[in-house]
Image 1 (cartoon, rainbow, N blue to C red):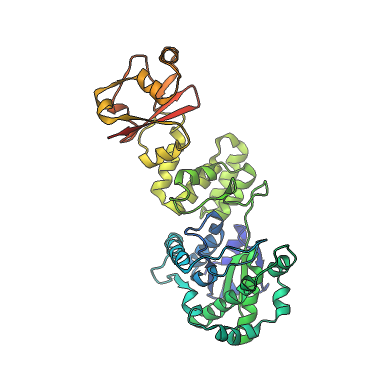
Image 2 (cartoon, rainbow, N blue to C red):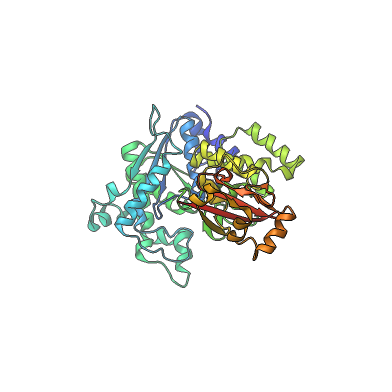
Length: 423
């Protein structure tokens, strides 16, 4: 069995381990590990990729993997890493979010085969319990002194808003998850982001007290950029795994824009590329930083993981040609996403099929303020259709479309306009 601890360590995926003996145990024994994902939104985001990659490495190394969708804990809210109270979600919202999260987990883990991952939902064992059941069977194992000493609680108690009893109780729920998974699946290891350390150690303590079983915890780093920003955040917004919330083009572009100081570290963490290939990219980065080979590899590999190889290839192709080569062979949705922020005009398909003088297209698109200005721009060779220069008097027809219904106009080097054909 592959030494999973060494693999994770070499890829920068370990922050803390609850026991120094864990590395040796993982090399000799098959473990079952679980990581929880609270469906507080309808999609996971790029920040969730660290624990997802860790789980995938565990499965590839032959260990058992449990992916927990925390529908119950999502209704309470984890205070870890927060300075204020979360807004409580309705049961309907959580149920809908959980479905979205389940679908995304299946892209990273193999739920079929001899070492199939298992997906569980903590609502299954939490919902049937009454409040009295919880206090007697779970709460009695936690002293207030113990809970208050946790950093996630301590920091909130010292804040202006404090912490509600609801969020104060969150760690007992996550601890009980570990006990349930230990009992029913033989789970001996809980993983999570480094901000989950307090919750993870609470689970370790509960299992050891109730079952007298040795269990362990492992945390993964919260990734930040060289500027100190959280990886997976752009202008204050999360980079979502759901293409309806973050388009594949935005996703790819976020990755390809990563700083030279970060990209090699991110390649180790967020891809399955072998070490030799990453070292090769590191040398290429040092020798030819302007070519951005490492960033392009990062963008392709992560986009392929999240959206599939076909989408990644299209994003790669679009990035290579869209600004300086003849625009063709790109899907309509991708082209629309690429030029989502540029001015858009329309032309009727029937009119276009009959042929329209380029001057009329230029004026209608808003590239110029008058026909006279448009003529001067055309005479100077400053008008491009799908990045191909057009001459004055050119009749624009359906053959000039880049996709079924889109055409890209450009004046100068960077002034783009989109023309949408309407039926």
